[in-house]
Image (cartoon, rainbow, N blue to C red; front, top):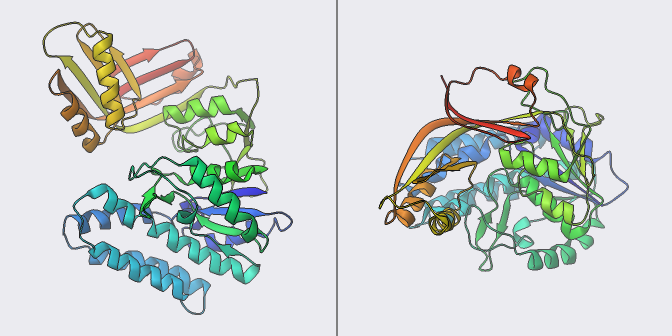
Length: 413
């Protein structure tokens, strides 16, 4: 039993779909679950369309473009448009017209169409090559109603996956969607942007799979973004612990929630290239030896938030507890933090909605100030040589150094 996950870049066009099918058909001898993301930049396009629909602004041009792009791919792959794909287009149009007062639930009702359409296209093309099954992930992956970043109900999810998947897998590869689920009322939920890796890990955990393979447009997991570092190095092996830390600091190769369910059942994760499927790639598994190769991670679009005590009392433990309760309430991930006698400073992803929730929660006790347009650079396992490799960053705003890690928040020049 293996789980494959293909991201949007791997199915951005008809050739990508053909390549996916070619890879899948190389593994005919064992059960295979194939998790597929929305095609190319479809999720970004759907976010723009959904926002305009929610704000009652015209969106027909963007919607027509999105549908036309998928129809072009279908025209290259099929003699005629499969009926279920045409139905998804109609359902998307109707869903955009549905009245709503709350943005987050509306977002989660619209965005899954990217995955539903892409997996239907992949399923129909793969069915020309081999027997295959299509699965609506929403029927198996059950979550709470925390829209846009839902938490998985593991007991229910494992029940449905272990009940439904073995029967389907007897007929061939099962094609399903990343990133999406449903709550107990049946409403669509999403697991957070780029959450398809996590979906792969959910299926791997629930099915006690032999492995999870994430197919990317890079040869494996590198120690730096090859667009920024020409001499980025490939890792052959990494431990769960090391990758967890890298994703915490912002490395985008693997979704941060992916590792834990795999580690719980000691399921290895392979990161391989769909461009060169025969390449070795990187394997992530349980191992004692931790890599000491320096790694460079960059996060753009950061906010620096400063919380200043209003009554000039000390920033003591009770105030820190209230701050952390507020960040949890606003679902804010702290990327860097620092405190002084009167202030607590944190760095977070640029999300003004979450920032406003934080301000509302803390305004009685703290003055809330923030700076926009910042970037965060992290060097893990740094050495003197590491600093010489950093490109020019700009004005340093906040800098921290521990025994193994260096972080700098800066305003780009």
